[in-house]
Image (cartoon, rainbow, N blue to C red; front, side, top):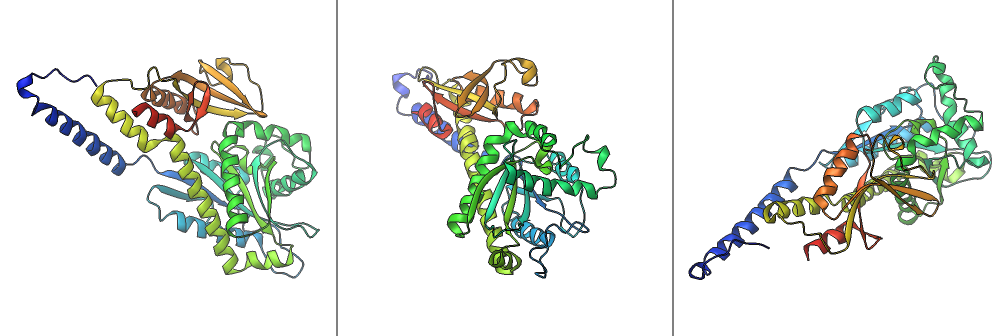
Length: 382
């Protein structure tokens, strides 16, 4: 650090005072940052179906109603999440009412939500059983298309559906292709959440997991945040239907979902490095140094992950220039800006958020290799 040169007569006093004031200011500011947390993490919970749309009814004579089970689990998840002061829960419905599909997405968008989770139960004429979590995509095999078709057909219960869905036809596979494009920029986060959900179902509850699937589901089509649709299991499977219809089953499934959502938020917090970045920022304000220089670490803002190889032109990225990309497997990851200073990356993140990329986040690279943001920030302090 570049401290003011102190005369020899004062070396026993002033350095101690300067360091003490620095330390006190640093930890006091960090403490205040921790207390004055950022805006709450907003989760929109969507209980599928409702009122005259009961969803699936399980096996004949079972008496199960998807709309009731989905609502019960949704309310349990929300009640648990609401105990966390940093999380705000918004429900698309809390009673047995009918909501149009586009209304569900609008609720999430108006709330500027961080997550959208739609909760459902499955059915099939076979002995199929197990959980599934869907993200929006065009990779519709025949089975996934049938699920998408079933969930999307609720639009026909709306008197004025033609005015809201731009000629969309759930029975036509080609009609579903365009649905996934809006959600592609959130694909990474949606898949991460879906993986955490399925892992909690399979590892903690020992439920059979059918994995993460892609399907063209309208309820996620217009949401501007990471979104998943969770199928809790098959009401048509004898043991599974009884479990999901029971109080015990609903409590356990809700707990698994709650844990997955909290795990997702923790992962996001680590990647974004909120608390660490506040500490770094405070230290930088005191020392007036850019401590990341000359150590090979670069920060970028990841704005999207897509299967499409887009030309790096501003019109493809809401007017943003200085865009770069990497190909990771079948996905292209798009980044805004490059800097060795984390505080500059935070400024870039604000710019990106103002352009509508609400789920963008800062990533770090060292000599071209990505590393965790926490590790990068620790390195800049050493």
